[in-house]
Length: 586
Image (tube, rainbow, N blue to C red):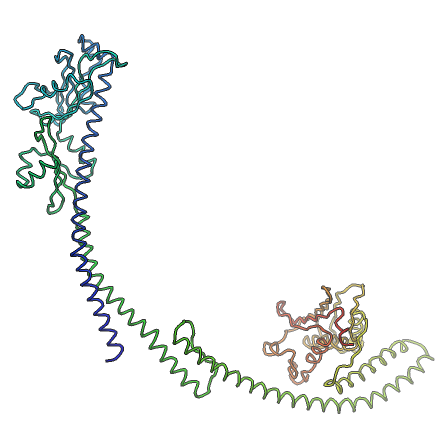
């Protein structure tokens, strides 16, 4: 069986194992957990309903105590008057306070004020104090009459269950004896149901005990009577029952909360969806795993095999295998790359040796040619020097401007002889003598010689240096040769017409000399090998040795020469010379 088939069977088996494991977890853990969650939720709902009823009693108790602690109420209970009722006990106080009953009973247990209001029908009603319901409203009041504290209880009336709060009437300083009680109550009617439903944000219903028994089985009713709360699961909601009793312990009414169980249904649906998603994810992850193995292992091995076949033909040794990961395949690629790198380096060294052999042959041929030229030039130079000496003697006798030009010609003939000697001794040990000179004077001399010799045509040289002397330890003839070579190259690049700017700047321990022209600049192919021999942009006009020789002269002075490409157009060569660079060559 191939590796791919093994991977497929492994992925399918893993998906099946995950599904079975989830089913076991759901059966033994999640199912019981959901049942416990429903029970806890039902207890919280029941507790919230009881808290709302207690808050309702506290609200009624606050109103009741405020009236009972009113000094005027103390006097009214002793001696009730019609004027007091009209001014201090208005008829609308009950509906405005959302109450159903206000009673004022004096110390003789006689009702001196009685007002009732039915919120559902918005009309004033009369609560019967003496009725046949055990225990009746009056018997509940009498039971708490002699107690000097707030009393709360639930009584039955023909209008429904009544939540009652009774408070003793005292002076505001609480020193006087009780002169009676203030009684306030709230019917457990539809407005009461809406208040509970709004508070817990669930649907609420008020049931009589008989109606609750019809909805529940005998066992469920028994549990409700024992615990005063019970819940069961309906089709769309959790039904939470809360039982409330009167003073004698008899069930008075039941509050049923239809709590939405959508959340639990969503949980069960989520569990089923999770099972399906788990299967899909297992297959999807397996596919990704298969793809990962195929991409990370098989394809990389195939790529290594292809590159190995390509390398065996020695067509391109610069190919490399990716090493972007840290694993065994990357280690194999690293070893192969090391082998390729060694083969490539050997090939490069072989090519460099061939290039050096060709270059050495060129240099040997050039040296022989330069030696022959130097010997041929020295003979006519000797004759020219003798002729100039004779002309000089005659010019001294005759006088005139010629006597000023001839010394310069003699000086240049001497420099030509030095150059020819350097061509002969170029490959030998450097025996130049360095001494203290002025670099500005060397530049001035180079410019004047080129100007008088007409080698730069109509080229204008802009000299950017001051009158101050800039001392340097150097060989002046060699530096003058370098400067003249750079100026002539710039002039030829501008076809003998244009402007060359020479700037001399100081820096710590030396000078920077900038040569800038207005020509087309160096071609890209020339810039790469600008200081190599036989590299010329003048096509057939130059041998390509000028910059090469100048570069090595500057190197012998301890300086450097570089092409500044940051200021187009034109070309800018920067010569850097140390102040004492030549001292090491003496």
